[in-house]
Length: 166
Image (tube, rainbow, N blue to C red; front, side, top):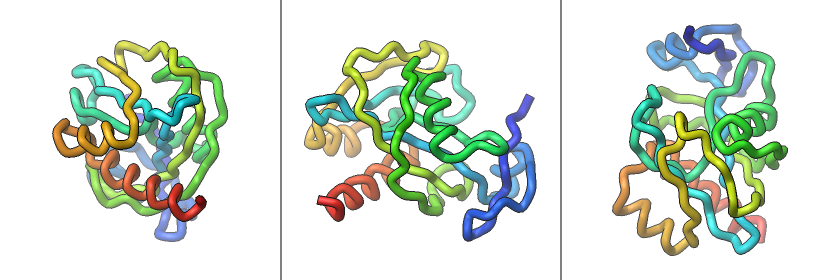
């Protein structure tokens, strides 16, 4: 069964409930939450999506995430995705949102951050491989590996946000 999401407008206000498949097909804005996971040493978790997932199988990702369910905040969606994909029970911090036009369709993307233990146990149905990369290693990987479209946009904005905050 297709998941239900909230269709939102350009100000991120709810317009109604639709299937995610319909939102993508019609290019309607909806909400997606992603979390950049860092370990205590500042390395960033990168993972390769399972070949069995429906969207972007086998591609690498910088963040862990997915669509927000109906009635879910960005933070709740991010926490649920971290639990489902990595087995982590944490509440990530929402840093910012923006309309992301890369990927399958435009969507509001809530970018979060969390510091997690370097020992995570990913769900093999979702994650085929994972590893911790330093920022320079990740810069190289983003040029050489095949990442999801969201990864490039979200990570560049994440780095700009962190630079602004420091």
